[in-house]
Image (spheres, rainbow, N blue to C red):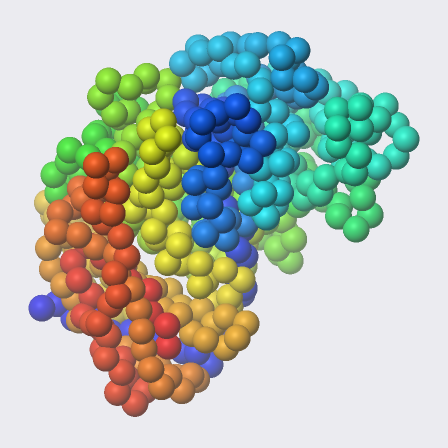
Length: 494
């Protein structure tokens, strides 16, 4: 059995892991909003004011910290005034980006803010720069956050909400380099400065955290321009990166039918998140050495071909053990860059891309990715601890990636948690861990794994893959020995 060694230095603390790293993203795309989160108050599916109970309960169990809405590409064709007032009077629109379906605007500002209040999470709203106006964005912020006797605040009151909402995060456009306007970095930087001027702080106790549209993956020029031109005006700068098994956007690979070659390339490519955070972070450090501007990875996750027979514009894909491994690897990378990464939002929450939850009418299931989010709750707002890992490689077809990934943190109660990922699909690995600075008296844990690489939950077998108690960790003095199963995610409490 291959072996790895790990030194867990609980006596050497790093930054705090912002709970918003475990954030989510819900776009008006496919069945994410309609059916996934919103069924309407008249639906036979149990709901509270139209928000379905089962999905809400599942997300609340994750302690979901922040939810991004309404897009995505949809944000830059969304005009918020179409989504307020009596639902029967709201105009419909064509969702040109996602399947050309008719959007009836029944889920709008009031419904979204009701959702985040029911979830107990923060709202991250993305404004329309691509097809909207400065006035439209300015008025939306006023409608949401002002308690003054003013036109937009009074319009909100007329629509049934007296008190202003708490909206902490606001994005000034989305993917302005692409679907949000095909802008050059220099042009968007000027647009950001202009639009941001009119994102007003109406609540002294909760100033708006303004997020500028950042780079597409490896576009370092975009980050350079934004940091040079807008650093004093931004609280956060976004980054988007998707993991594809193949390099072909028109044939990305199947979500469920894959061999070891695509297992390997998927993990290899998701590990490039480390390169992205390092290089974009270095540019940000040049202009912002005090790290006041957070790096916001507000779209990340796997992207495969849609499930056969489904609308190509709905981006509905299944979710397997491979996706769980991807999630664990990315979280470890985010932890390692917690001094700069202030938020991350997986794409997306329900029924779209690397989802937490899949629904089929009144039926619902939890995906392997959901279970990793749930297992990793212990890292929310915890302090990173130093880990020095020596791991064997997982080699395939002459290429290599690390077989083991590890991250440790100490929570506010003083408990230490160690999370581990084994990327190798066939071999268990023994990890010998020395612990310094923490007198561990016991160890307990859970594991997520399965017999096959493409194990998944279905509506006929909703618990085919789920966390199990883990007995492969043994503690002896200040040494912890872990037998880490092949293709697994493990979280230990020390």
